[in-house]
Structure formats: C-alpha cells, structure tokens
Amino acid sequence: MKKYIDDFKVIKNERLNYEYVILTLQHPGKLPAMMPGQFVEVRVDNGPNTFLRRPISIHDIDEANNTMKLLVQEIGEGTKLMGQLKEGDNCNLVYPLGNSFSLPEKPRVLLVGGGCGIAPLLFMGRHLKANGIEPQFLLGARTEEGLIALEAFRELGQVHTTTEDGSVGTKGYVIHHPVMRTHEPEIDMIYTCGPEAMMKVVAKYARNHNIKCEVSLENHMACGFGACLCCVADTIDGHKCTCTDGPVFDSTYLKW
Amino acid sequence: MTASGTFGYGEEFMDFFDISCLGGVLVKGTTLEHREGNAYPRMAETPQGMLNAVGLQNKGVHYFAEHIYPRIKDYDTHMLVNVSGSTIEDYIKTAEVVNELDKIPGIELNISCPNVKEGGMAFGTSCPSAVSVVEAVRKVYKKHLMVKLSPNVTNIAEIGAAVEGAGADSISLINTLLGMAVNAKTRKPVLSTVTGGLSGPAVKPVALRMVWQVSQVVKVPIVGMGGIMNATDAVEFMLAGASAIQVGTANFIDPCVTAKIVDGLEQYCQEHGFSKVSDLVGALEV
Image (cartoon, rainbow over all chains, first blue to last red; front, top):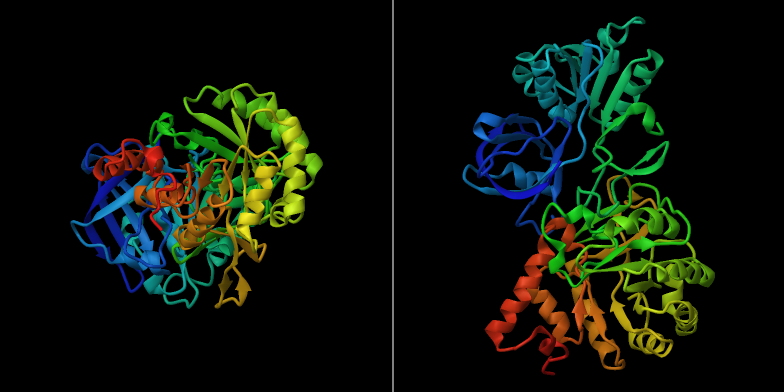
C-alpha cells in the first residue's frame, strides 16, 4: 500500500474526558484507501522534548468527507500537544502505515480492547459490518470514565464492558467478563488491542480454546516505515518490525 | 547521502520521493553473519535527539548479495554498503563479498558502532586497531573505501590521520555518541542494553567540531554528519570542511528531508554567490 506524507487540517477536537480526545483530520484532497489496524505517524511541533513523530492508530475513516479520526490518550508531552490542536490547525501525517487486521473465516468475532487500545477496533468493527459480519465488542477500563466512545461502538454491534473498580459493567479485567469465562465460547476469532498484559491473557485464552487471535502491538518506534528497526517484536522467526510486519500479528506468531 | 541505518535499503523511501536526486545511499550496516540485533526496547527519545541500540540487525552479507543487491543494484544513485564486524577477519570476508558486486561503487567501513558487544566501536577508538582493520580491508577491497569514525574518542584528528595513512579514500564522521536514558518512574534504564548511540540535532555541535578538527589534518574528502535536519545544517558542515554530507535521524521525521536539502544547498549557493556547492567546502572564515 502506497505511503504518503501530507498536511491534514484539524476540523474537530472533541474532548471525551480529562485524558482522551478524538481529533478529526481532513485530507486536502481525496483520502487514499486505508485498512483497519493501520496507523499514522503524527508530527508534533513546538515541543522541546518531542523530537520524533507519534504513531497513532486510525480510529475511524469517513471516505465521503475525506476525514480520519484519531483517538489520542494524553500520556506524554507529544500526545498532550496533540490534545491542544485546534480547529484549523495543520497536522502533518506519514500514512497509512503497517499491516491490517484480516477478515475472519467464520462469522462469530469478538473485539477486545483496553484503554486507548480500543482505537483501531472501531474502524475494524465498521469494516466487519460492511462485510456482513456482526461484531461483538468487549471493552475494559479502570473506571467508568475510562470507557469511551461507547455509543460509536454500539452502533456497530453488541458491547460488553468491564471496569476494574466495578463502576460499570463486570468488575475486573476483560478476562473476567462472562463472555470469556465460558468453556465453550461461541467465538471463532478474536481481535485485541490494549495493554500488553491484557493482550497476553486474551491470547492465552484464545490459544486454550483454539480460537484464532490477532493482536495489535504498540511498540515504541522512530520512523514507522521500516527504516530504523527500533520497534521490533520477538516472533518465532526472530525480530520483526512492528511498523511494517505488524502492528497486527497472529498471537501464535509472537513469543508470548 | 543518507546515513546507514536510517534509510534501510532505499526501498522504504520510494513512495516519498525519487532517490535519484541523492548523491548516494549508505545501506544498513552489514555483517558477515546474520544478526538478530539487541532486545527491545532499542530506542529512547531524548531532547533534540534519540538513542538507539539496534545492534546491527541484518541478514548477513551473503543474504544481501543474493536477495537485496539484485533489487537495489539499478537504482540511479550510488548504493554504498556499510560494513561492520567483530573481528578483522569478519571485516575482510564481508568486504570481499561486497567487492564482487559490480554496482556497489564503495563501502563505508563502520569501525564505530557503539551497540555491539565486541569489536565495532573498539576498532575505531585507538589508532593501532583502526589502522589494522583499515589496512586489512584495503588489501582486499578495490573500490572506494570510506571509513566511518567514532566520536567516542579523546583525539579525533589523530584517528582521522591514522585511517588516511592506512588507505582510506574518504572519512565519514560522526557515528553516534555513546549515551544513556533513565526512566525515573520505573528506576530502570530505558534501553535493553542500558547504553546506546545518541543522534539528532543534540550531537550537531560535537559533530561540527570533529569535522573541523579532522579537516585540518587530512587530505582525503570528509563526509560530515551528525544532526543535520535541513540545508543550513548541511552548509555548516561543508563550511567546516566536509566535501559531502550524510543525513540520518532526520529521515525518520521527514522522509523527504534529503530531497529538500539537495534543493536547499543549491538555493543557498545562488543566494550567497557560490557558483557550485563544492566551493563551500572548507570556506569557513576563521
């Protein structure tokens, strides 16, 4: 898939809570094709300590309006600067980067997201729905406030939730939800993105139940397109770049 | 030119611009045997720069010759191979393989990688060991031999003069500066290897100083690098004595930056009354 570098225009910065914003960025012309699971590298200007671009998952695409949504969790200086972008600001992207989630062979799919890891699952949910598959989501967070963008997910399929403090949904981690407690799960494929510890237990569950599982990694990287070799994942074939061989990997390919 | 380890094999940048505008591409550091490189994490962002500890991940020179060379040999620029090793024997054998590749006009001998346990930088930090590896490779390698110096030394001019005496056709500098990043929250080093190589604008003043010092004592051309982000930076290196420049870390931030620098160099010459870019070399008014 051809890669581009372009200035997008910020047309909306929607604050979801104290640490999450959704940026809507408009392409100056026709937005090229992109696939769920892919990411962009965002140039962050004006920060003395923000030297490199920030890799951010594509949260959603609106082809008709040539816009892309990025879900940003303000955890460091770079993402905090991104959270301050205003309508009309320019935002320079290198995109689209990485591989993508694959379509399932069988229709019963579960998308498991934790924290900011829910970002690529909305785009994937939309892609599944467009391909005649009704996705089920299992989204986890620490508290109710951390469960974000639920309405957008509910438009695409059934949404299950967990919170660590039990403020909403099942109390505990995603792995504690009834949908993942059954010994004979009605799932053929799992897609997961979130904290590595969460993805590891989800991948283990999938392996124990012979369910195919794709995980999306978010390793630190510099370039995003295979030049720096900084973002490697440990796979059964040795070190592979998360940016070009991933970010989506079959969980059995990783040395987890 | 593009600096080794920051531009892959050129292919990674094809979507962004036509690399035929470049003077050359230094392909990823190549060793005799396959190397997996160091464990993740291998990178830390630092003020105006980054640390890396990739550790020369590559599939080995034979894989390069069989599988990568056929893909890149007809690119319309100079494709040079950065050669690294842990022993003199490694360097010789690797250079011998590359010597047979018709479309590779030269190598850059990397005696300065800070991220491998043995050898690498060790060769470049003393005059006798630098001389021994350059002399050994000079005997088997018949085309252009560029030698890349480490900045992690007390007297860079001395090393530059020594490798020129040993048969280097040109000298490139600087490789990364040995550095370290600490995570105060976890109280752990950021890199799996604890230390790594610092690059980016943070190292530019050190690099300029070293290019200047080496240019005072050698006659062979100098290829300057270290934190070049734009054409003005490139001009500064040429004024300090570099005949050519390499751009490294900037490629990660703007994949088109080298094309912009090529244009910017010409523009600088037009605006400042230089008839050609080479007139800038060593034109520093001290």
